[in-house]
Every structure is written in C-alpha cells, then in structure tokens.
Length: 204
Image (cartoon, rainbow, N blue to C red; front, side, top):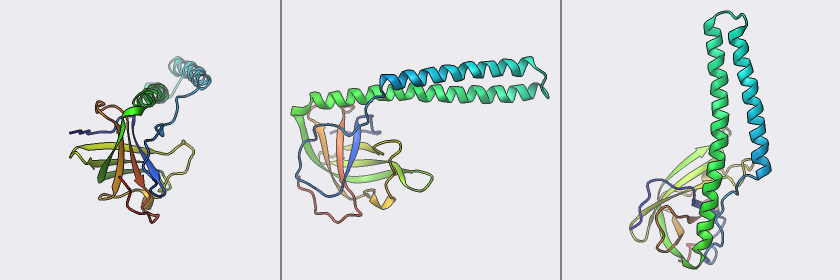
C-alpha cells in the first residue's frame, strides 16, 4: 500500500481537456532547471544588491540620523530584503535540481511505468490576486487503498492560471501513472480532466 502525506517535487498533475487512450507518459510535465547564464546573472545582481545594502547599512550607522531606532529599522528592512532574495535564489536552484532528479528517475523507469485508477479524495487550491488558480494539490485514493498527493503548477510563471471551475473536485476519477516497485518519493503523474468540459469516463 502506498501512502504519501505531501507531494514531492516529482508528484505532478496533468490536466487534460478530454480523456484519450491511456499511454505511459514519456516525460514528466515539469519545468526545467534555470540556464547557467541565468544562474550567473542572478548571482551577479544579488552580489551587487548585497554590496549596496551593506554600504547603506554603514551609512545608516555612521551618518547623523533621527536616532538609533531609525538606523535599526532600516537595517532590519535591508537585511530582511536581502535574506529573502538570497533564500529565493538558493531555493530555486535546489528545486531545479530536484526536478532534474525526478525527470531522470522517470526516464530510468520508462519500462516499468504502470497505470492505476484513482479517485480524488481532497483538493487544495492556491489562487492569484485576480482569483485565477496558481497551483492546486490533489489527494487521490488509488486502487490498492493507498493515498498519493500531487500538485499542478502553471506551465510558466507568466502563464495565466486556470479558473476554479476547471479544477477537478472530490469524487472525480483520475489516472495514476507511476514506476512499479519504486519508493514513495519517486515521481508519479496523476492525469485528471477539466470538469468544465464534458468528457467520457476514462478507460483504465
């Protein structure tokens, strides 16, 4: 029995317009890693920002100000901003590595990918400021009685999110593709259909 309490980086949802003939997916629908040029460009910009921030902090404590509290407030603000930027940068690189590992594992298990039927037990939706869907997570009960979780992300950061009626609801049928005999942290793919489009029950 397979049970997962949270989706790993390689547990993904693919939303279909209509059901098609079941066929093992050749690749996971995951974003690739940042290009080396992008990584270096961001690093240089962060270093410049850090040097500028450090210079600003020195000025705050070496030049006349309304008081020590003024210098302290802006020091915390500058430090917090720089920490957030560096944290996001390191996190993006680490997440990219995890996605690369997941894609490689999926490719390595190509000959062992099998299909299971599943039913959505619960969904969690995260929306953008305009109400469109940024991500959603599905908790699915599969045929062996276990539960797996997977997440849908917008294809790109600039892509428009879905409308909430397009997110599958609890009770809907799904297909679950995973590598036979693989550990729980290995990638899996849940195929669900857009409920706003009339579709036939999937073949399993």
